Image (cartoon, rainbow, N blue to C red; front, top):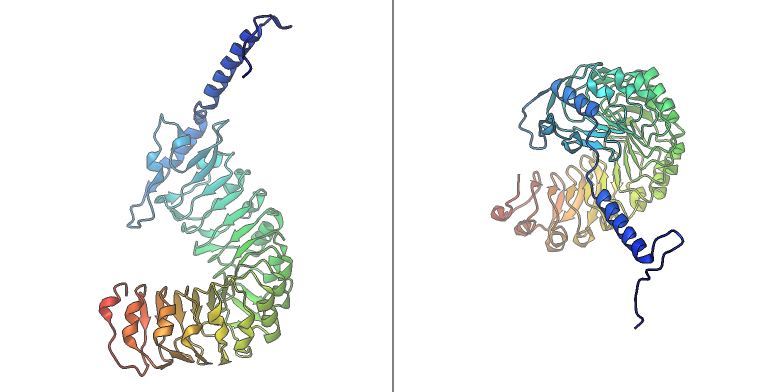
Length: 443
């Protein structure tokens, strides 16, 4: 093994290798200490702004277990970067994130609130609180915001058009503020100016004055669009296919009319599609067939209460193998429903009830063993309630089989469905004993 030694001969810099090695060790030790030192303290003016924000609201005591007052950890003289819900930049000590969701805050967010002096904020979440009055137009002062969530916080009145000045926004959620509304001009400014938007949720805001075609001005890179219960009316835009990066689309519970446009088939990235409760919307059989055939990544499909009376139920046989939830409640479906749907390996929820013209007879072995919701009430579907069926449904939590045709039933087998919490077998010609003592989770 070769010897290891240090020479004491001076180098060109006037240091011997031994001295140089010692110097390098000291430098490394100092660097290690520096890298492990705590981040800078919160900037004083930022801490002051947060404390003023805290003092402008009271805490509304609720019985909700998912809420707690995060601002109670905010104490003067302590580092605000370690306060609950606060995120700081580790180099500057400036506040860049504020998550005060479900913090029991009660009061009015006035335009002179110190919140609007936190100009370095990038993420702001004030959801699920109890704010009174309107959404302030001063949010445009927070020009660095990329994420803004004001959902479920009881805001009311017009959504200010100044929101459209937040040009860096990637995610905007103003949903579930039941008394909030959007004028056509404000919405048009939002969709034209927020070109980086990837997620938009305006559900439950009154958008009855907004023309559906203005949706086509949204960023083509949008991945999530949720406009549920918005009072939208008229025909669906015929060029929805341009939003080809959409993964989540929820337009349920509006007043759309006419047919589902053919170019929905171009939304090939869709994971979830909900058009339910648009009672004057009716898919053309050919377009629905193409949609079902092309949306190969679809996991959740809800078309409740739309008119599918002209659609052959067996046209749904090409649904994606990745499908986990299918809801077709009250669609006026008529004819035989394909049993292949039960063989989808990831199907967890199947809701077909209130389709009185829907028929089909399904062998017990045709059911996915991950099914947790089975709702076939008020159809003309025939079911064999016997051992093979029950052994495949060990994960079932909801079984709604009111007013169908149950063939060869052995009710004692229901005791094996230990996860069951909702059961409806009414209006069937059944006899026998139900082992209620085994169904401990029934609600």
